[in-house]
Length: 182
Image (cartoon, rainbow, N blue to C red; front, top):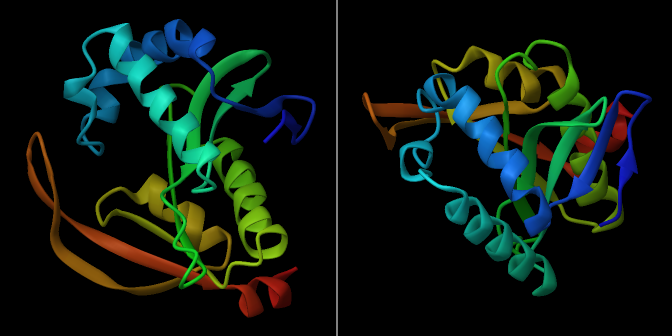
């Protein structure tokens, strides 16, 4: 993936290790909010953890398993979006994302997800995109809902977070549905 300009404020860029310092600072700044919904946050205690994540994402990309990008708003890193491993046999993929504190509620992640859904369903010709998020995370849930995903069900105690287990809402979107929405 190359830099993708969504609008004058928002750009998606593939992550590289040169972004580790900025990404770690964003996690540090947003730690208390992020840890409420993301199990990996407490394990990221130094910049080397971010470097490992970026290298793993690059390896996944080189193996044709998807890619991960940073969101830059007005030249400042604001969050991350990526595909979970692409299931080529079943032609499906999940999308994961997070935004740093102060960037939520402005439509940035919805715009980034729209680009990732377009790419998955139209360019990669996958049949299905899935987004899972904690049922209590209304901000995260609003993204697939705005994009026309279907709530397919709830998985009970799907993920252990620092404050206990959370249920996951599972949203799915099929290529045929996305074309109708376009």
